[in-house]
Amino acid sequence: MEEAARDFDGELSLYVLDVESGDAYAYDADVPTYLSSAIKLAVMVEVLHQVDAQRLSWDEQLEFGPNAIRDGMHRLSRARLGERLSIATLLEYMMDDSDNAAADLLIRRIGLENVKAQLAARGIQTGPVSTLLDERLRIYSKLDPRAHELSPEQVRALGERDSLGARARYLSELLGHAPAWTGQELDQAFGAYYSEHVNSAPMRQMGRLLAQVARCEGLSAESCSRAHALMRGCHTGRGRIAAGIPKTATWEHKTGTQHRRACDLGILYLQPDHPIVIAACTRNFWHVSDAEQLFARLGRIISTAASAPPREAASTVNARSER
Image (cartoon, rainbow, N blue to C red):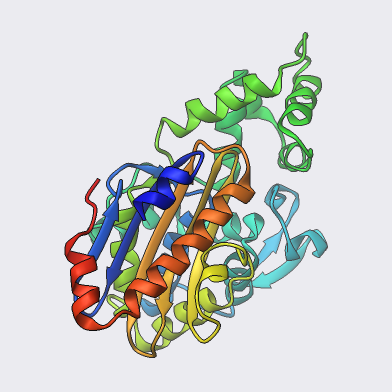
């Protein structure tokens, strides 16, 4: 694992836990790390909690209006303005395709403060939790406070630019800034935002949350089953940890990707009813493909170690890194 981290042109934070035995491996696992869309795991857990508490119904419908437009829309990019979608459908869109509009609609309904409170009640330590729209506005406002006034449609248009430089130039147009900001300046804005630890958590903490989901802690049997099904249905990140595990394994997960940040967090089943939690995030790389190659390598390493004979596996675990 340490060799894989050294070969990577960036930084890795990793936490692996055998839920049954309690054996764990940690590599820079206590460093607060930006989660990007992996924060949606916390949103999912609070939605399930509110359904269990009968404060929310799967059939309740929310309206997709102009203020719900986001960058990172997938299935909702095909929705009509004014269309109403059920809580169940929005949760599926958020987890299967990582739809940001679905996520923010759910957050607005369940309450951002309740997402944070749910994490705290579970003993999970994170930084401040934010909506996806506010996250973007805070990044762009590092260059100009007027960015807080950008409309959701403008934020979506910015996110569709195919390079950081193009996004910086378009932001300059929107805000009437001359000369135009450069990609390097926008890169620095992202860095300043990441340093605030919004939507961030150490991998050890996210590993604990995933272990609670694996054990169905604080969830009804029905909600726990739905959580596992939603994570199994995640369509993103097929070139990440999923690319390194055996085809017979089951990988229930959520990915996250943002400028120079990428994550893959989930529960691996090499054998039925034997969950292995993997929480991995990378930072300060330039190419997502490099991070994905590392994730695939981690999948191979973890699968091999977890499949080793008991004596060999115990020796591997006892030699774990606690960087």
